[in-house]
Amino acid sequence: MARRKRRKLLASSADRQCIEFTSRTSLHISEEGIGATFRNPRRKELRKVTYDKCYFQALKGGRADYIVGYDRKIDVIIELKGSDLRHAQDQVSETLERWRTDTIHFETIVCLIVFGHTYPRMTSRIGSMERDFLERNNALLWIRASAAERFSFRKLAGK
Image 1: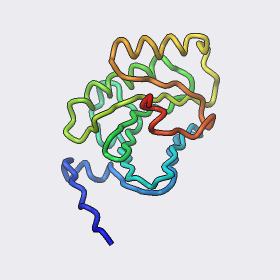
Image 2: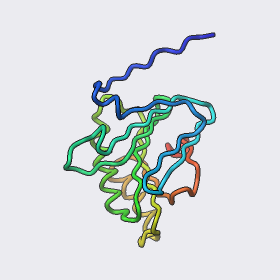
Image 3: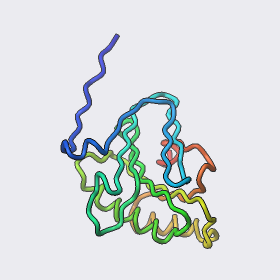
Image 4: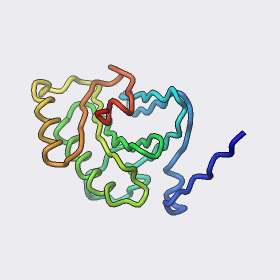
């Protein structure tokens, strides 16, 4: 049986408490009743970074809730939001800027906003928000309802 290479974690020891690894067939993250489930049928390594108030502790600046990495190739910046999509978009955008300069980011970075409790007032503009985000940040943004689907990393990355 082949031995797995020991993973190198470039984050400081203080940041390690905010990072978890798993190879389960799915990963569910949630806060206050809003959640997202990521499929991992091939049991590749997943890295979950609790970004807000853990990995990134600054009080100023927008910050997303989590960053989930897949197979050392794709990072998904995730914001779980009740309904304020404009604020969520700002949080994801600012996190994206910082994450691109972080030493542990993976090659492809995409963003996901999952909304829940109340349906956003601006649902007709979701598609235009996703296109504008791509033009401004050169990264895909997906805006989806909580529990509406189980996410595939390849699909999120546009592959």
